[in-house]
Amino acid sequence: GQLQGTNIDGLYDPTFDEDRFGGFMKQRFSAPPGSEMKYSLISDIHYVSDDLFQREIQDDDILEREARYATSQVLAQVGLGEYMSATAMAKYNQSIETDDDTTLQRLPELTLQGTRSFRPFGFNPYGLKLVSRGNVTATNFTRDEGFDGWRTNYNPSIGVPFHYKNFFSSSFNLSLHHTRYNLDETQQTSDPTRSLDDSNDRTIPIFDYQVGTAVERVYDLEPGNFLTTLTSLGSENQGNTLKRVKHVIEPIVAYRYVPDISQDDLPLFDSFDRIRLKSLFTYGVRTSILGRFLPATSDTEDISELTPRPEDLPSIDLGRPIDEFGAVAGEGGFGAVNIRRGEIREIASLDVRQSYDYFEDRYEDDFNKTDSNRLPWSDIGVGLGLYPTRTFGMRFGTNYNSHDSELSSWDFSTSLRTDRGDALRTRFNYVRNSLSQIENNLEVVLGERLRVGYYTRYDDKESEFIENWGLLRLTSACDCWHFDVGLRDTINPDKQSILFQFTFGGLGDLSQDVLYNERENS
Image (cartoon, rainbow, N blue to C red; front, top):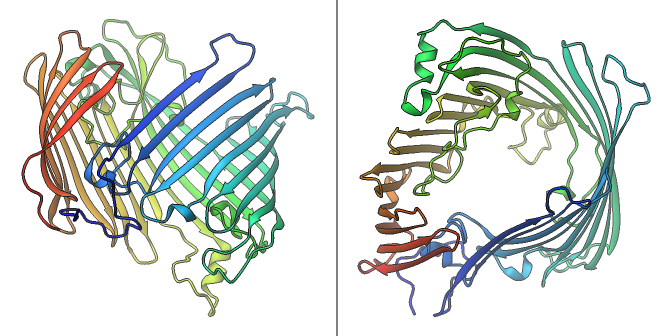
């Protein structure tokens, strides 16, 4: 029949069958603890019967609304002794916007990898050693139309980490990519009159160096100070009291060099086939405040200065979709590491980074340059996170384009949960000349077994609501099932619907959408 209320712009195939279906399956199986051989099998399957499915039947478990592909993967991994492992993977991409006949699949991808450290300098105060790694990956790219075939990459590398007392730590790394191509089909997709060589190869060395240091100081806190009061707001945060904070400043400098190797005659399966010339300097600084919490009834005890590095601390998952009802970010505690007594938690962090490419600077001075977007200086990336309690956190991130003197993008996320379980989550996203959206999710507890939720997504560029829906949830006394009833209003497709959904713990969910009123023509 005729499509009504659905935007089909950009779709290669906007048709659909009368009987439509979609589904997903996730599975993970691993060797039991203590097994002599370590192995695992992971499956992540997603399928839709037509390219309009995600626009008309919204289920992010099957396919996220903005996804360009319905990707299915099956992966098997096995350990081969103490230093090696092997992986076999199959990956299939069902294209939503383009022709499936020209979409590349990885069927299969085989990887053999190993790593081992050597101490030719013996045990020394500088931590000098050799870290050797090896990786061989063979991928069979296949599709119905266009060039395809095998790509095999051999990637040996050697690294030398070292440090000087506790003043700084650094590492050198030299790696080599030797890539061979053996094509089954050689016809170019962009120009059918041209063909690639059925056999080709390249060799690219890459040099990396990184150095960093850290300055830290520990502060004792007097009882009743502002920070102790702030971090103890809410009944859930009364069990532990903030006793000390550690302020850490970590500057870092990194360098990467990639020589100029001609790759124009190679097939382009993905970005790995074009490793660009680089002389890239990256520099930045990260500062964070870590809090040491002790049980409120305990006496003061010595606190070890050996605390987890900030990157080892779990972070607040403020990046997860906020239209998930009943799933509040940070439900298990924001960035908390439980220790013998109390916990260590990151309270605040700030990081600033930028990169400079010497070769791009030379390219910018080239009067024959063809790409005006290639600039030597990257955007200045800034990230600020504040996590005062286990039930409240916020994060702000931005990229500033110093060349144009304006923001390229920014985002702001926050999550708040009350003692009784009410929750509010908000996210702002802005990308220059592309995106400006606001998302909100509000959940209110009406009783022990009843709660109501509201989600909205607003497009600030078009000044219109993309999506609105409200939900009432009834949970069983055993917490083994819940029943949802709700109203949903979307603009793509342009429809209003009533939602009835049963979810049984351990069995998945059974849902039914009922048309609320007539769709409007787009």
